[in-house]
Image 1 (tube, rainbow, N blue to C red):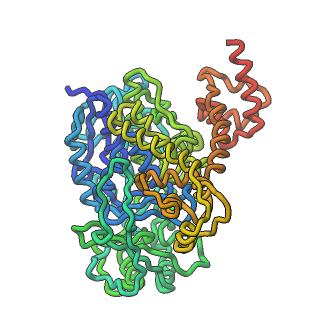
Image 2: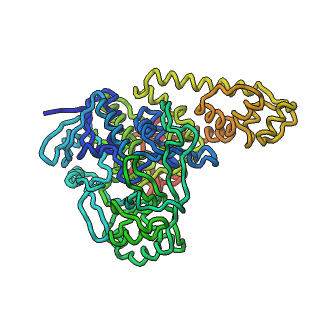
Length: 623
């Protein structure tokens, strides 16, 4: 009988990152997936990144994960979103080639040492004395492992809905893990139902693009991964398109709400608030007549176009009418119909910050099984679960990221501290320290962790350190170089439309002005640019937002103090007087690791935290 260090169940974005990280950390790993052809598949939107999500991808890369590298190899369009806004909300978004992404990720998996891939469906979790032993497939095969990572995505006891038609199936007609839900509940794990959906896919040649707003990629060379050196030129990138629904679309939807599974009671699971179905949009925003829809290519080798923002649970015949009501889609042919999917998820309050179960030792979970939505959120959790499963087997402390260090830290802390009753989506607004958690500084924040964990090579890390030194040296040099406003400099300022300089000013201070940046001051001064594009982005942000960054760092120091106050696991909250009853119950449910985590639990007030802090000081004196 085969025995492994780590068993990963599920081959989606969480599963591949979990399997790769544990295998790269020298753990004998097996990735079990129902269909190898669907490894790293994109059953919904064929894209990677976006607001906050793009920063997650950059963080995954800085910790030694794979998603960023594959996204850069397989994008067919790349854009920096919110480029005209501040750096805290800027993020990359790639329109990905759905099939190339799968192919490239599968190559990496097959070439990875210590990693085996097996096609099978898992039906049972094997445990003994509340500790995981392995899994059993639906065919009765037993596979033993020291740790198990469940990354079942939306395949856990899932049902697909098109109107009143309900099919016990996973995404894209794949088999669902129906027996595994029962096994988890038998082991004391609480499940709840969630819902998501996907729009129809349309035959490319049946669409009239002539009156649509064209959305092109960026001319600048951009990528998610620090290691990416080659970029797809703009003339090789494909376009996306923007349209809006019509009054006719609204009329069709509103007249058929009783047919929508998402609204008529057929589905009990809660759907995603920030990516609702088109029928939910019309009901929620009843005074709004139109909604924007993005028309996006699925692959260079496919005739399918994806309608982002047009997911629905309405039946096929209604979908036909809805699609034809869109501008440019009067003669459209639907290749794949939209559907809503309902599935089981684990209450994330049952998970530790390491993503290990509080109920079953050495059982880890990652991705949509934890109540999240999105490929990026799943991949981030998978990476962390793989790292922490490996560290647990090596008797090492778990690797935990703080909220001021990474969006990954915000994501996991939100899940295990606050829980969720709907598919959780990463948003910039969820991060208190988002000016510190930028797209341009992911390596500065996290690459030293990736290197110390053993997932970033010495060569790459040394290259990064040298780059960091170049930026730091240049910033200091800019403080010593001055523009005096002589005629040559003034002519160049006028040429670029820059505000005038009437007295001696350092280049460092000039960059702080809204209309200046590093390239411009170098041009005005007549100096060559010696930094890379990435280094320039980092330098500009560091200088322009120096004061704000310093303020955020000071606030983050307060968080660190609270996070360093450890709450003993044997503490009895019932012994603490004057804490509100609701707070005590919430504290007992979450069982927080630190005073900082306790402060973020819903229902625990600042006064409760103050009392708990005083109690902990007294507790430590008596231990």
